[in-house]
View 1 (spheres, rainbow, N blue to C red):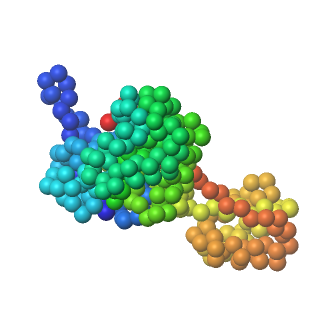
View 2 (view 1 turned 120 degrees about the horizontal axis):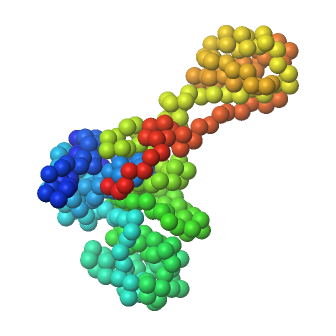
Length: 314
């Protein structure tokens, strides 16, 4: 659904535009149909610039892309008709009602049955009772839900979400996340930028960690395995030094550490090795109380890749 090849974007800055700022550098990636793809990176990494390029709002300096089967730069009108976009700060006609806001955009997209579509998304987003109130009276969470309804009003093939829960309270964030999960279950293709790494881990099939360049791309679970390996903790009632060498000699076992009465073992394939290790320990006289897994979060992977510094907006 989304294919990019060597996309770059350079902005000219300074009073005389004599300096170059490379916001996106040589981006090549592919997002599959029905996939929820998370685009992660610090402020100023170029995430929003990438979204603007892929939705046909700005042109890349270099490279090519296809979105929803249309070529960027040649079929931009068709791209815009087949994507929905939720920006981090969506603008609304604040003096108009929510119903009128959606009606305007439904007409712009030539939605066949405007009233039916408007009613559908006002109801889905829990805004039906406030549909005749001006948007200026809405809370930030309500505005975000209305903006999401606006992005979906024309039933786009691809949905771009730029920080969809940024600045929302926990209740509003949960509503938006639940709705994204519902869209995911419907097979929608979603390209999402977010700073909320727990959210990305929960919602995304794959994530790309990005800082002007694409640093890594895979599923959260594969990234954990690649960066940290798989570590299993065997909790024992007592500890004997000989058991360390016993476990280290088992096929598939890597580094073995002792922490109190626990053996922490790096394993290539825990599903195969765990039963073998447990049997060996029990045969040697160990009493295995339980077995656990050390799970590294997406946040740990992210910080390993890009650090924690903010760099302004891009």
